[in-house]
Length: 85
Image (tube, rainbow, N blue to C red):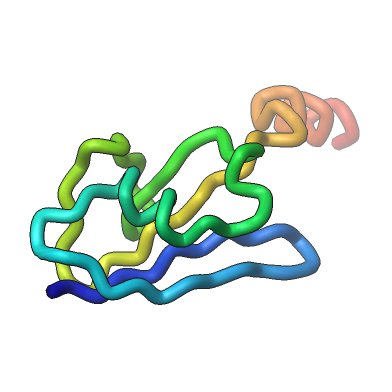
């Protein structure tokens, strides 16, 4: 058995679920079992900050992070800051 944590964060709050899964469990299985509110709005999934596929196997102690879509394009933000200078 392995223990993992599934996390979904917003600017004002965060949801977290600790799970105990069978060896060989995948990212997709962990996300489905966690059933965190707002999971449908996620753009991607990461394990310890590195993008992951649903079929990626998990290891004991992994942190599965549900990533929200970007609200603004980072390149546009950078251009806007450069113009403001």
